[in-house]
Image (cartoon, rainbow, N blue to C red; front, side, top):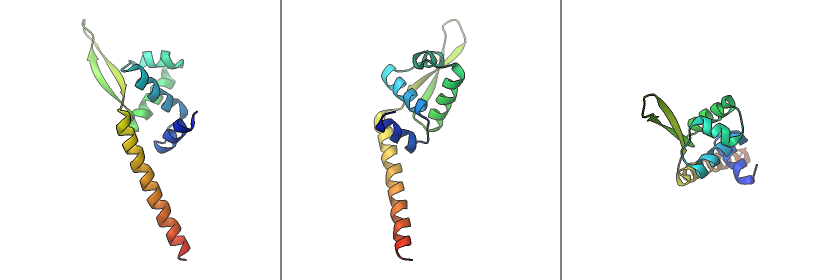
Length: 109
């Protein structure tokens, strides 16, 4: 895992494979879960769990599509990197403020 991927994983409380999933969708565009699984060379269940964690962290979203002959499927897509950066920045600023508060109160004791 690169340093940047490690930072993203920590900020959004994800695993390495979840961050890789985000980057896969960012590079490839919308994909079905079976396509993601194939692209990442992992089984469907592992992919599904990663997709779920990424959706909970709001790194990806899904849209429903319909086959021409009936039936439906979901396409998963990466959230715009600018939005991710903005949320990461907010989280880091919150952590820094909390750290500052804790250090300041500890120094005063």
